[in-house]
Amino acid sequence: QVELMESGGGSVQPGGSLRLSCAAAVSTYSKICLAWFRQAPGKEREGVAAVDNEGDSYYVDSVKGRFTVARDENTLYLQMDNLKSEDAATYYCAANLKHWCYSTAFTDSRYYAIWGQGTQVTVTL
Image (cartoon, rainbow, N blue to C red; front, side, top):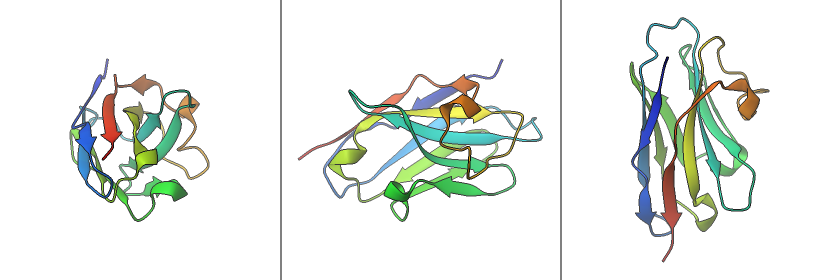
């Protein structure tokens, strides 16, 4: 059973940067979609970015140009720059180990069967 473990959350001022990591030992799977979701208090969980092992990456409009998703053999990353107060949330990594990512699906939480426990990101003065 694959497990996901996020790290790298913390508190940062608006305009600052953070890099999240997710340990994901998934290199033996032929089709992989790894994603970052976030959930702020009182709000629904939303997909933020995703990357697959075909090299394709996807972003929601609110983070384009500010966030960068990447992966290596065993880790998923989310580089977050120019953070805004609305980026504050608990961030989760998620994995689909049967299919690549698709633009029509990457933000759908039902597309992913495996989830991490989350890491908190706070953006405040």
